[in-house]
Image 1 (cartoon, rainbow, N blue to C red):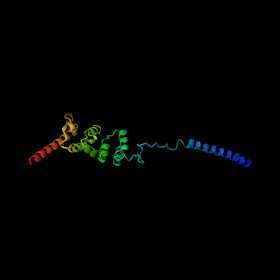
Image 2: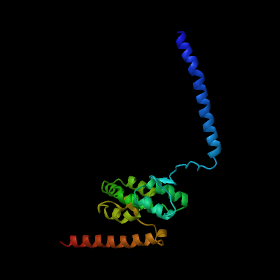
Image 3: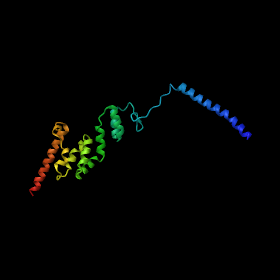
Image 4: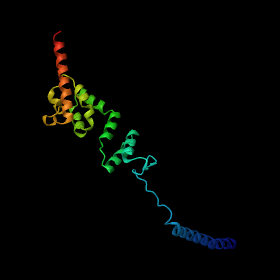
Length: 186
């Protein structure tokens, strides 16, 4: 027992001195080199996106479009909000890949017009590309009252998309009328 106490008493001052020297060395190193070393880089979606640091070679617009091409829509939205870019490109790219249009068409075919109305209310600007597809896939036996919210309002006809949809609707209904007339002549 006496030997164990002597060994432990012998090691205690050496451990204490070693710890003191280590702390003092690191403190002096931090004091001397602290102002000359670069500060740590905080990593956020704006300066580290998928491991690529934002560099001078990419403009903000290029980085925004790159994130859309990489299908990284969350980071593209972050860049768009931070730089006041339009989010229409993000939604358009996202919804062209997702089966949203097929979901809407299925809703039409299953007469789920309340679900369709909710989708169009929430995402009408993004669904403009699918508007005519939606209208074209409504069964002819469906009463107009159930899908009249899809038709453009007179006050919206002055806008560019309203004119486009109105023209397409006119040709769509005109072709349906001609089909009905030709079918009834048989």
